[in-house]
View 1 (cartoon, one colour):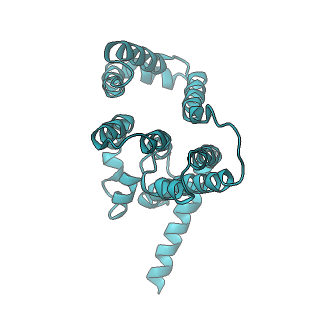
View 2 (tube, helix red, strand yellow; view 1 turned 90 degrees about the horizontal axis):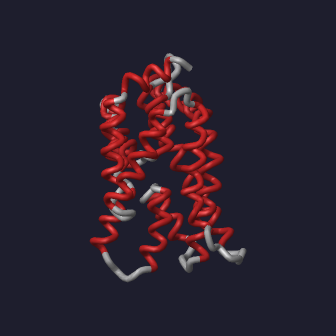
Length: 240
């Protein structure tokens, strides 16, 4: 009984530490999730589609693209390759999190499944308060973000069942979110080396490989360039 209470206390402490860190994600995911759920519903899908997809896929940009895939002729190989390209950045996220997740036990499976841009950002960079179990902190950050997305998608699908209006351009919401994230990062930087690397690598690879195949080469170039320019980037961060 005492051991059970101790474990419960450990989980609760980790949850209390993780929740405030995810509040900015709550605001963003509710808005994006509602947009996605609404988009699915007005595209002709039932309430259960956005609900189930948000639980199983949990990939915002992929879920928006999946609407078009589901409405297109059956093409499993093309769909697989498209999903791989869109989510390929998670390969790099996974490599970066190998050390942090190696002692998480059974929770590792969910942490791998629930990896998204926002969870990676928090779990990779956040200093965990002393006395808080790291594995549960990572777990609750991932779980909370997942629940925010499910909630938003579900609300959006419910709203979409009652409200009808022109939804042209609503799928641009993901692009606008990443533009805002980039601009916020740009404003925080003293030296813009990492941001310029991202811009230049993206433009060069887009020209070289085309819009359908540039994502993976871009990520590879960014990783290589960030490694080469690690010292000046680190000095810039320390100068803040």
